[in-house]
Length: 342
Image (cartoon, rainbow, N blue to C red):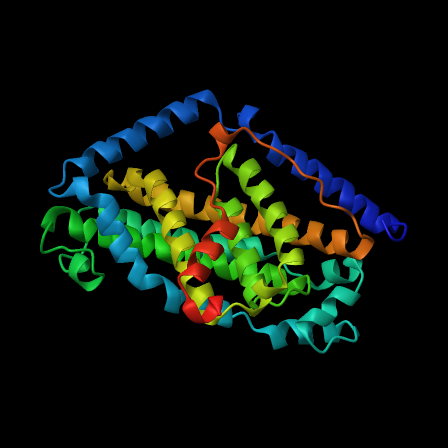
């Protein structure tokens, strides 16, 4: 550390360390009672069986990828752009802080940030729960629009039974991811990180990956975040990435995250229960994303303030829950962009 922590920051850092330990040992935890887990698993199996019985269900992954791909970029950019930086700056100014840009917030004390930053979890989780319930009832009740597959590009013509359902599922996953992405950007701004910069968009993707992971997957995703922090510090060229390259990275990551989320939500195919399941899962996912984002940016803020080194941590590869290597995706997309490579 470059300076001694204030008592307030010391308490905050102790809380972060406790949270981090929880993420890194998530594999052994059982937060949900056995009876509830058993019932939930039965509901998921019932939903999956119903979905698998639809004509064309064997092509689900290809249909889903095609459907969600067309929904992502414009919506995600619009959502992040809707985070009103000036409103956040004015919120700090109302507390008499000398802040003119988002990055000026980094010069403040953590206590000052905590005085201004609102509880973002409630608003985001409530809105996402409503959307998830609507999607669940549409799928479970057999009310998915017949044209859903065609409108969303899911290929309803080739697979009329599954096309409309996949269309709704893709729209639901895209809506959840866009909301979660905005929640991460919103949280980042309150800690002084400008989400419009290419390197910050990449960091936000890594945070989103952790927020949407489950169990031991969170440990693997947290390790990926630390790797990305170190790579961003060493690779100044990443800060100059072309917008087109970042856009492709976002699309690739969103497709993988969307598929991960949708696999968990196949219980939405169960009538009536699907709506409740969809609402609950969306709300829980947004709560997880906001909580993880707050801890990660809080930890990053204090690390940079006090010069705390990021120590390497390892995790069993078998427990990575399909963790996404953002750095690898960036390298792949950069190699495919001749102008970026030049």
